[in-house]
Length: 126
Image 1 (cartoon, rainbow, N blue to C red):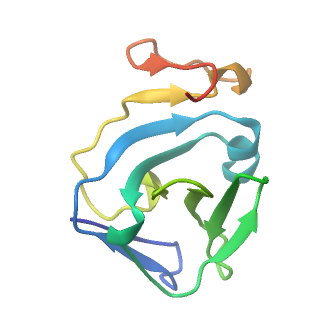
Image 2: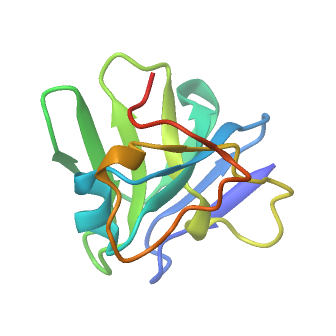
């Protein structure tokens, strides 16, 4: 089971079933919202339980981003057509047993850091 929260604790979430596809996104939007890159894991929507009221920002025509309106923690990424939601790895409580499996949108990454070549890299998401 995964559980987590925002920085102030106003929003909490749990998922009982296995999460999948831990990834780091280096796209410009994720870098602007987080200050670096966004690391998340996918959780099926029907398994994700959220308490509190995240605020949702329509970042594009195809996706929205959920954050805490009190402390500003970026918690969720949701593609309109996706059956799952990306949940912030940094917001999870305790040890997760997860490891990044890939880096996406590496063509957009900042010039101030390198990505280790031990994990699969994709210039865009497929």
